[in-house]
Length: 632
Image (cartoon, rainbow, N blue to C red; front, top):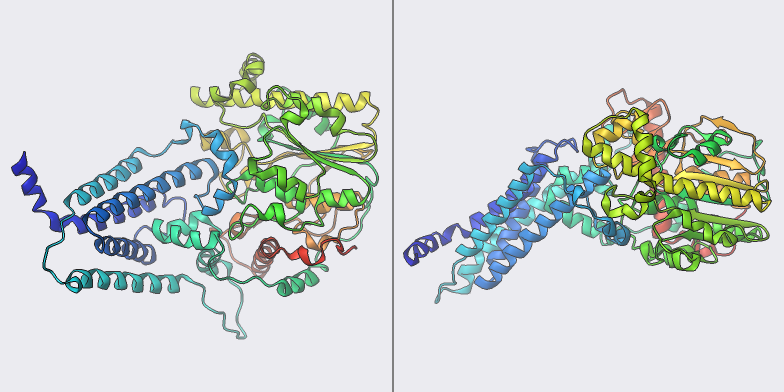
């Protein structure tokens, strides 16, 4: 055995080449197995140079360490990046996005719902990952001792040279990936297709595309800089002033719905994972009856711009602004000024404004975020007297706070629709499971046993939410408050907890594209409004300006990124990564049609609006006029 080990140690000269190869294999294999997600070829020159440059740089830096430090660094780095690849894979499976350090701002809720069913990754990919780790283990074992008597510069000079060469490769590749400055000439037009890749790399908002076109290491390094605001981009309030001056001419004015709900109460219910395929007379009869007698926004979409999809819609539907994808810590939502938030606007109009959600105030920092948005109190399970925070039906115990005397605005976030749809959430599903199995059996939906079990549990979760909806409406009727109260129901996101995407597309009845999954229920019930179907294309960003118009609140609607759904403008749905949809054209960086000037102009306008909204948050734009918000 000793002789065998001695022979192996003679291969110590292979330690650094194996280290280099291990890093390169991990990066290459990840891009290879996820190349379908992006549109960059595995052997395109930029990602290859990023891969080789980082593998060379990490190997050169490791070689500068003594033997023990070298071994520790080898194992620490390969394990770190291996874990990151697993996290990327799991998040992509769940959300269609890769992990970003900005997700750490909102990780409190998601980590609590981890399920082993999410680790549905390709076995070949996992095998390559294990091979990369084993290669690094062998490289660490072969790490040689330093030779006594060798001058320091002879040991370090080759390593330093390799590090410098790698840095030059990385710098040149990075510079070549950035967008070139436009040259003004008579034939110059904005080409969104040609600009897509360098702009995606520059803005770093498309996690999937950026990772597939840069590789694991460059993505991690650049994502760290961008996510924590270290990239050097300076935001200018003066530039935003100019944008908002132009924006004033782009929004809808008054219309026949202006003030239609003035002085009426509002209960705004954001429903966890209540997708279109769940809103049926069999699964959610209470909610379905309300929808049939409501102002129903039939072409409503709820895109998810962050991995924290619930928090995304929460911020959008209360502030009218996009959450910043990067360069902003979660504390900003607890500290920034939001004078135009719904809670602040209703409070200024003499309403009592409170928010309700069973989860702890520490989740997504809601306890501080909601107070900063203008709500008087964030009521959670303890304050509502709930025995089990998972059961939406127990939210009704806080009815006297939800519908107090006087004018009120109450914002409710339901919980029971949350996944995973497994036995881990049996406290929600068990009370409804027998009924769910009967109704699903009559539905005609078919699928694998695993998919049908998930589907049935999702229906059981939805039934629990529906019980609360029925109890809330009955209580308002009994209390004589229903006629003077409007209820807005909308989903926080589509049913993303179904682990088989193909099955989800089947039960939702939509194609696999950038927009279709995002279509979700949204309707406004009561308040004296006549039932109607509103077919205009709209999304979560349009909720705040629509409510401001309906209640004739004094906020200047130019400062919201969306538009009044009843207005004569808008109708374009911004999607993640500067894509958009208007019911006819679905534009993304994979668009295959002819890029007309109209499409180019719309793409440029969507990008400008999204960036301006995010920059408004990043630089705390409203701080300068906190309590003197402009009025229309």
